Length: 511
Image (tube, rainbow, N blue to C red; front, side, top):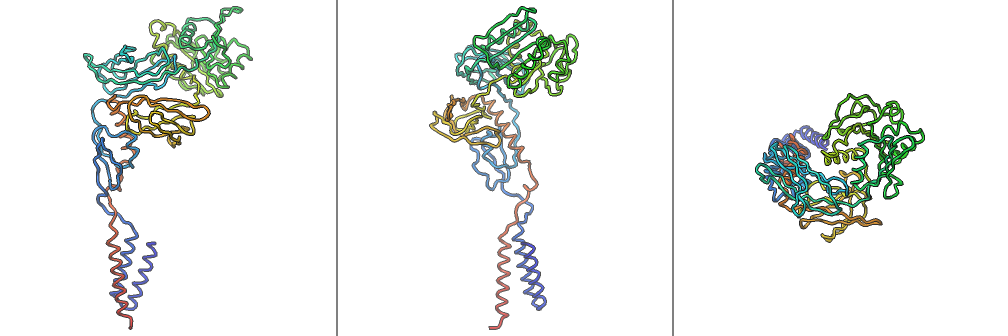
């Protein structure tokens, strides 16, 4: 369009010059230039908009006319930043110490509950986990991050309390710790072993204490087998456990049947302490084993002696290891794990809680779990009254009802939540917020809404993280120091020039 304006303007100027009407040529040139500038939308150096100082207690609803933002303190919540368009942000991270809490909101009965408090300071502190009646459940002390664990005895909905104490038992932080302990179907385990050991006895005790259905067989000799039958029939076990000697001595048909079960979705764990034939494992499972030095220990929080044969590197082909000396790989729909540690029975008396946590980590590496039809996802930030809460779940469709809010909402998909559906609600009061899905198999869940005064250091940490993410969205661009050129003067100049040409044409034309 600008090219057309230039061509038409140039033709008009040349026509007036050919007719020796120099003033009219000048007016045509001015009109063409004004019209071209009007269509160009040029920018010029200068400020574009203003800088807005945000009050965290009253965030703005719109940023129209705002070039940049400035905020003091810890910033805003993620839900509040999500409502604002991206703008350059001036913000300095406060130096005051904050906390991050990490704990499961839902827990299956028989699994250990672990609470981790991550803090920036290195001063010694003591972390306590208290029951609802104030009884001390677990305690730990040390510098840096602290973790306490506790085994729930019953399936119930709890609001525990955590307390962080400093020097002279000064309370550094305290607040509620909500958790739902579900009475799920016990884990079904089938074990086949070729040689008895103290490790097997301890493992069997741990599984029984966790309410697992255990079908256990240990070969005491060529013709003698000690069996322990489950209290219920185990048709499709969730976990298959064998020792390496059983697999090495088994017939090819028995090996093939075992691997077929794993391919169909079961988790298979091999206790590698008594492995002798590395070639069998290389041919059957493509597992490269190497001889380990005597006395070499595994890494992780619970060092244990390594088995005589184990992979030499953390990544060995399709196998990937972790700090617990467990190498695992996908096998069809299931997984196979190789446990390259031994002598854990020595910790059964001295470190029973640490040993149970270690075994829980081993099973988590194998992903020994049963998929629920509906899986409620943990909110990305603390639910608070009066603040928008995004609730998401897997395996849901249709509608969800919130009885406490008297609301029924439609599940909606989110691009940033793969395979999940979400709704947004505004809780009214602290406490448990219930929710129910519809459909042929309705599912119920609940989420705890914290009070505004709960865990101020944790809330501050979440706001700082959300503010840092918002600031990273929009670094200060070069265009922020420019403003658009005003358009109305060119429109007025074009109109005046055209009126002057029209008036002169009327005077030059004969009556």
